Image 1 (cartoon, rainbow, N blue to C red):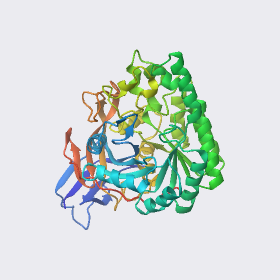
Image 2: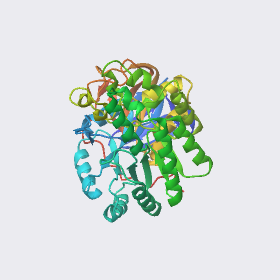
Image 3: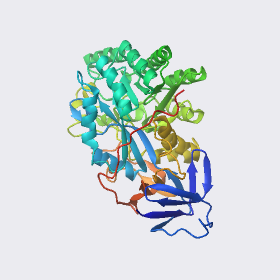
Image 4: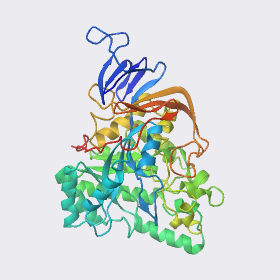
Length: 470
């Protein structure tokens, strides 16, 4: 087992910053100590020394919402576990939590084994699983207990996509009751699917079939109403609740109200809801807007949703930024909906860019350095039962470490990204900052603009229960 000494850098944890050296022994952080001091009265003898002077030393990113190889709309997300985790590593993310999809009429345990087979020996970084549930019956409720024992301690329900993912309120209630009893965390896609389905049908019937109308037919009211309803169901059952991919400021208001009233409610947003908009992106000329079709949809900049997401991150009404990484190529995938936006596969590719895009929030004064680490690494590790191993620079933690150069520059483009997708939702974005070196469990997997990792290095994480549950 090799050892590495990282010297001269500024360590950034969720609790603050300090100048310190980091000693890595094998897969773990062995020590964090003041520069110039010694350990055991002698300098550590190591296999490799990395000079991080002038740079930040941060815990590797934890992206708690990805969809590698996800089946959707008659196709599959274009990133495999191999290509997607390699791209994540390039961007400073060293852990993902992906979603197992329950097939209609099938026991979730069967699908869990299939996802294990998909990922085993393919991932460049460590990975865990959430479980999507749609059919809620005695069999799937029993499977929830078994999955918790397997380290799948969070379950996602959908209030949209009838006939594919949608669960009715009674099914969600039963799932929440089970989570209350076994300690799992319920995740919710909060949109009123019945309302959206009617609006989509009416829009297509009128001939309003461009990507822009994807956003118009999924209005903020549908998100805010479903968010409120999910909170009420959680309140009835006493189950903890985590709302995924929040995009509407009115949904944040529902979450903030619940938290102010002492409810055990949490939420994430995504980079696209911080930067992109209905008018500029979904409304791009011709079919270009298909690149940005995702659900929940991009919101109007004129209504200040983006700024409200940043505010929610500052006030902790939003605790996490994940990507909802679910990429589809334009050719052969997004173009399935060229004449009907409702047939465009929903998803954006961002797993490679999350750390950079959120660091730009530091540059712009939207969030602080420690908050950057907190929302991208520490809180998702705590929220999903990985903290201690992940999400912190401290002795005993996994040596998942990113050396980040604040003076570097990153230009995002489909020509240079490493995701398996033929376009970029972030084409031309210029970011102040650069991921220089990435360690995953002590192994250098990205350095000097080269990838040194390999498929199969990543290990399955058998997650504990969330540390935020009361």
